[in-house]
Length: 146
Image (cartoon, rainbow, N blue to C red; front, side, top):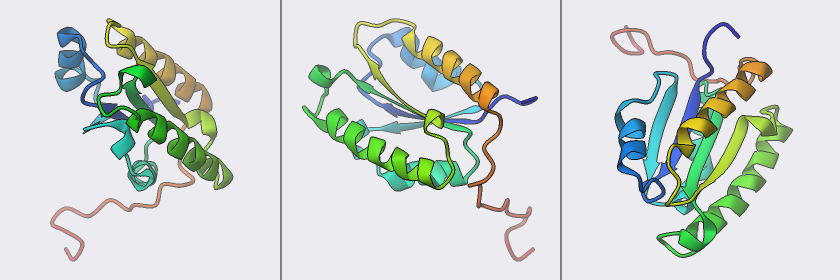
């Protein structure tokens, strides 16, 4: 893959405790990574993930708190169960399971998000571009009716 893979990063707003990590995610993410902040991973509707896939994401990473550290008690565990089932569906329709990754982040971890994203990016480069489920057509400049 000549271009860097496009990654949709769904991040729980509570899982990055380190100010330097949070600042990196908020302002220094590479251009190929699109950040979607959520109040909790339990609030991620699978249709949001499908929307990212249809929009051309080569991979989807969901980062959330460790199970015993969830701000909303069990939101991350519910998200993990729901999104694993949805990942089975995506795999069935042609989006490989390895293109979606769920990452638990300890509040005490420093620099882990950068390492996990870098490894995910390498894994996606090995897989190549995901284009069979990209369904959205780019809108012409000036709108659809231009």
